[in-house]
Length: 373
Image (tube, rainbow, N blue to C red):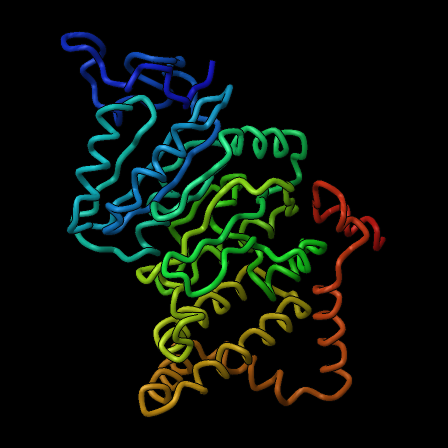
């Protein structure tokens, strides 16, 4: 019997005067209360981690898509609210009351920002695997988790499993599309991931790491860093089915990347520099990966430098001051000898070239490495 899916005709509430009076946090693992149950001694196989902040208009659709998952393994749903001022906390409490066996709410009393909220929620996860989905996105395939967990169980060397998503624009600014684009799906190497974030957050399932509390607070986009951090320990695989929706709207952090690029780089450029500064520490003694990060460092600083006016100059100066390693790598990349630049361009080309596995149903990166061996 599924561990997550709501039983037909049952809303998850306990009848008055029945069930266990303990709070969900008192269960070390597993479910409590009525409906499909699992022994409290069983830890969750998957931790769904969702962050919220003033997303009352979207949260129910996300939460319902979690509950609709059909699995034969236990799942916990961690929802971390970052001190919302709208009805989001009330909605979370409603779901936690109705489904105490799976919902583990976390309510911040002060706004931590996306980084602190998400890393704290990840640190609370207990599952073997972690699935991410922010509350303004949602899943559309009730077998999503089952498919990804089955693949990860069969391929123990894979640490990141994802799939395509449908991208929708609420304001009609652009046509709906699929991500990642087909042209980049043939190469899922770590090098390719450093140069382009081809994994949408709400498609990712990770093999959980021991800790997440050491991630620098200014890293943003955090998801890109998390993808790379997990991929360092194993392989990346993509399943073929489109199983989630990524919603682009005016309140989303990526909206201005297309609508107002100068504003986007003014506000998000320093975080990008912090992301790649943190990535450097994932590759100690690896000059080849350092060179790829140098390519991205040069690109990020150029984007910030292109922001017109004194605000752009101030942002560039602050970014260089806070991340001198990134500035140094960007300068070294620009001043590289022709031979070194050619070598870097070759690595970039290799990272962008589809492998011979590009047209099959599943693309584990280790198979690509095997083709090159």
